[in-house]
Length: 229
Ligand code: SF4
Ligand code: SF4
Image (tube, rainbow, N blue to C red; front, side):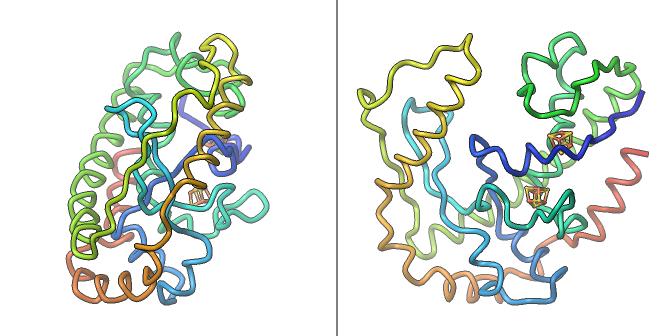
C-alpha cells in the first residue's frame, strides 16, 4: 500500500519540530511566490537547532517559523516549492525503518501511519530512493548555505545550561515534548540577535550571486514524480 498523507498538519505545526531551510529553499519559495526575500522574512528566521554531536548545544540557522505560517487550513501554500526538509518527511522513516518500527520513530501525534500500514518491500525501496535523492540535495545546499553564514560571520552556537531542565523521560512522549518545547524557547531567548540585524540585505545580496546555482522546483518536482509514482 502507498503512503497517503492524512493532512493532519502535525509535521507543519508541532512546536517540537524545527524545520531547517537552505538558501536554495528560499530562492525556490521566492520564485514560486514571485516575491523578494523581504516578503517572506516574517515567516522564516534564525532558529535554534539541537546539535546532534554535542549535548545541549544549539546552532542558530535559517528555519521556518513553527507553527509554519505557509500553512493555511489544510494546505501548504508553497507546496510545489516547499523546503527540502518538508519533502523528506516522512519518506526517510518509511524507507529506512522496518514497518514494525515506524510507530517508534514517527511521533504518534503525526497521523502518517495512525491506521497501521504495511508497506511492501517495493514501496519501501521507492521511499528510500526518494529520501536519498532529497538527502543528497540537502547536503549540497547545506554547503551553499554555510557559505552564506561564513560570508557574513553569522555562525552562532550556544550551550544550554544543563541544570535548567529535568532529564528527559524517553518513555513519556508528552513529557519529552514539553521539555523539547521549553528547550527551544530557552535556546531562542539566549541567542545573540546582533549578528542578524542586517539579515534581509545579506540574504538579498547573497541570493543575487548564488541564484543561478540553485536547482529549480520544477526539476525537483519532476524527479519526485518519477521516484514516487
Ligand atoms: S512549508 Fe509547507 S510543508 Fe513545510 S512546514 Fe510549512 S506548510 Fe508544512
Ligand atoms: S504528519 Fe504525516 S499525515 Fe500529518 S500532514 Fe504531515 S505527512 Fe501528512
